Length: 194
Image 1 (cartoon, helix red, strand yellow):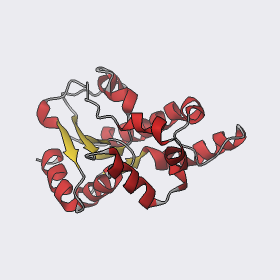
Image 2: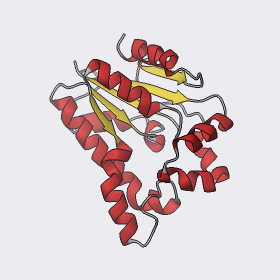
Image 3: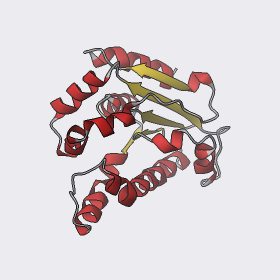
């Protein structure tokens, strides 16, 4: 049974770093929504006369957000259908609050939670200051809006519960605040590949 593993959480939590490490070790397909959407988002934002590096403003969300999730999930479902373990990275903030979302996605390829091992690693940090420190340290132009609009952006960092009908053992909430990512990785690997 192939795995479909979601790495969720706020910007700067370390979800991409942990997901890449797990993908590398277990030879799973790695799909990062930001990477898959980037060419289209840059073109769309530029055509609208907006900042092509913006990934957080209301304009970006209106124009690009849903497209990014569709592109990512189409690629993920294709890999799952081929029997390839697949790791997906993105916030999925709206989707995790919709109980039947994952079942609807799997149904598109004739699959269900009975024949697909869906797991979630929700990565978070202990406090806003740590998020800001890590976001600032990575010096990405994609983070400029976040830092310039910190008060508005911090709402996206609120800890969210996954509403999908998964067994408790399939969802791990992992604090990645420690300076050594090895500690969080050990927990991620145990929970995603136990």
